Image 1 (cartoon, rainbow, N blue to C red):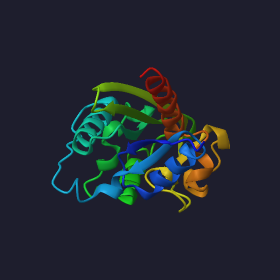
Image 2 (image 1 turned 120 degrees about the vertical axis):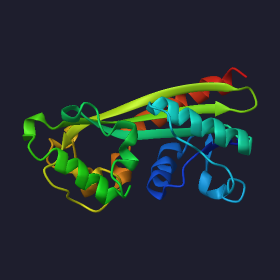
Image 3 (image 1 turned 30 degrees about the horizontal axis):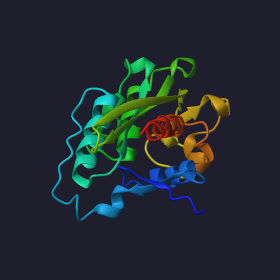
Length: 209
């Protein structure tokens, strides 16, 4: 008998994230749908991610989208936290610069790190995933982190966000994320860790129903 997969909504329109999620959920009992498929239904819905924590922003998005579409929803909030900047940009990673573009955000961060030596440029990515079921009001969150260093200059064009200036620990701090295809890194990056954790929570939640 053909097993029917459980539909889940992943609240993103980001093409890079969608490719990563498709790889994570391939071969599982879940069928991911994406916010980009529901633009008409979400046209007049405002999602104000104004919390001061990754968890808070992920919960806002998951609950607003889940309630609107009536679907079991996963939403994430991610960012880079730099030790020399007391954890900044953190939750403001996507809007760190006035322009709020990837290139401008990277340029601002590098400018602020200009006098920081290589051995003091430690940082980590954080991804927090919120799960929300509008039918039962079930809510849970899970986080994943990925450690590395801030590069001295941007390199690579294969990814998005702060990838051109993030040197992962796994690469020996030699290659930036943007020198890899994003799907190559999903087994070790912050989003992969958080969404795989969310999948385990979902399995237990669904089995208990």
